[in-house]
Length: 423
Image 1: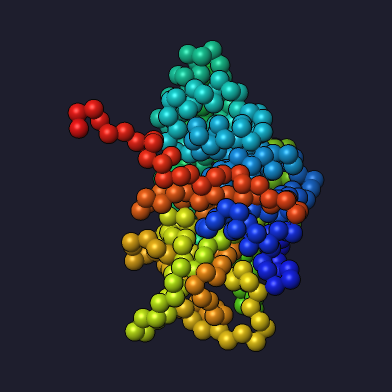
Image 2: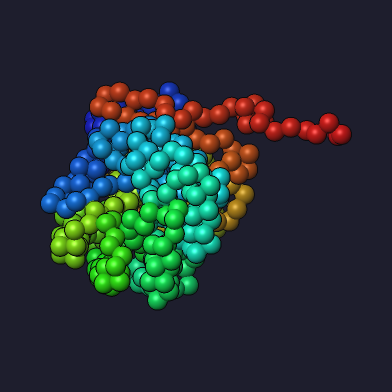
């Protein structure tokens, strides 16, 4: 459920018409609903009742500091994959001891900073990283609390570009090689081996791959205990999918309560803390991208709705062929005729297409449209390609809204660059 609904003929974020925000900040812009963020967090955590667990929001899904702050106030920790995300999590109010640092390419600078700050856990993803971290920790007179990320070789049955748990993926330690690395880490002076970590992919709409991966992790934990290595924490990652399409026939991903039941079934008697890293699940349906129609162009065989948002603002359709439901901001009449159109952006790339042959009511120049389920991997993946400014982000709470990231001016963008003295 989200809090974007039609009120008096206008699509609203909670109690604020999107037309009002458009008038204030221009288009395109991202808009997030506080009520949806809060509801999704509470629904997810309620599904974990009875489990010793900690929820760490996957900051990569939406690194806006106001979004992080909204979740941190509810008790969320953070899963980060860079120094920048680590600093954003802290700025958003997440305590250092509720931050987990993941990722395959952490630099020595990042590892040292994480140790200095005293974060909860560093998820190690390779033997060279383990060696580097042990050396850094000893040089600082510290012990690094770690989990070792294991690749369980499970097909998440999702898009190839967001699958992370198969043998050929770059993430984690091969399951067969993992026991030896755990034994090595257990003996290191600079390492506090706390747990095991995994993450098999994103946007999973079936619990079966989770079950398979969880059972492999359980067996590894029990095998390690037999060898005298008693882990106290299991980081199961994230990946639970959300609905992108709506209406009859739309796919319905598993609900958090069923996910929690699976976790309980497999892990409840292991006496471990579970760390969970939802991202998309918390923020995806909490955000929309609002754009304005610039032109409607009739081609020889297709009709194009050209809007002022582009693939630099919302990359997912171009990168993954991802689907986003498109809503007119002005509510169409119940009997409005509908026809297939291609919804495209202004970027000079043939892949700058949001939807092909999408059946929509009539749209004309100046009309506003909203791309639904854009709160995850929308602004997070945006860029200034084609010299376009990053779009503003707006957070709504009830009848109030606040610009939580401003649109930079062209002057500000260019002021960050320099012509060398020799020119």
